[in-house]
Length: 140
Length: 228
Image (cartoon, rainbow over all chains, first blue to last red; front, top):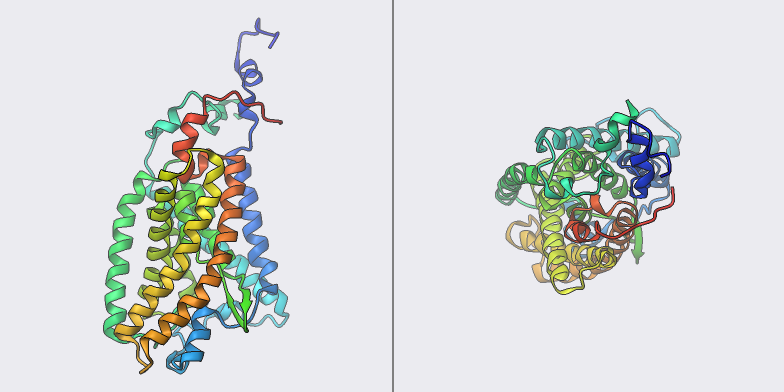
């Protein structure tokens, strides 16, 4: 705050705005993805193997036997088990991680293709300059 | 709740397929208004998280389990139309690669798990927001209640579809009662997961939560001191 004599004001601007030091969008996305991958890759092994609500009701009321095998039942990742991987923990983990990444890429790509270009949303133009784009030149 | 092939007859499956396609078509156009440079990557993350979370079946008693559906969660985080698309992509990947949910039943699953939970979840969320104090602290609990409601509603819609086009001669009333009973319990899990996840994102970056945006605009005027 005391170095106002400096010509290029970028560092000073940052010092004046503690708001900027919040969790960056990038950090949030990376943390979220790590959580998703851990859930799908590790925690999934510990999931309950009991039938789900619909399957239970189908069994109880007597229409479970009308279920047909999916045409994709022979897929390499059918039932979240990776074909050829005997270790159960690894088998479900691989299927989970790959599935999570496929969903991420498909949905992320779709969303990027659909998005509006440029900051047309009023909240993007709020005086809060903590948007990542505002600080991008500093990183360059 | 993933419906396998065979539970519903062909006409019902075709009808839900048409409804699903129409809903996704509308969502593809409407999602444009929800997506910008900042929220588009969030949509990818939300879909990835919903896929991962759907692998975690939690026990709800009597040898039965349930897992997150995620429509309400996605709708609050990235908007109802983008949320609907997120869950739809999850369902397509599950059906094609994991054999989770049937292929002729894909439309049914998109309607139940995508359209119904995202739209019901969002409507309940906005309705509660309208009557509750405009504070960021209400966002996560409101999302949790919306998520809770969305699950038995989806169960009721399945029961309705079963009454119309179920292939087995089973009493529709019995199916409805049983579906509602179990999915109220599963809805509690849905509420807990949704509340925790929305609460976590609101705590660090409320501006990235679609459902919190009206509250964030006012909050920008506060003087905040955030630790590095």
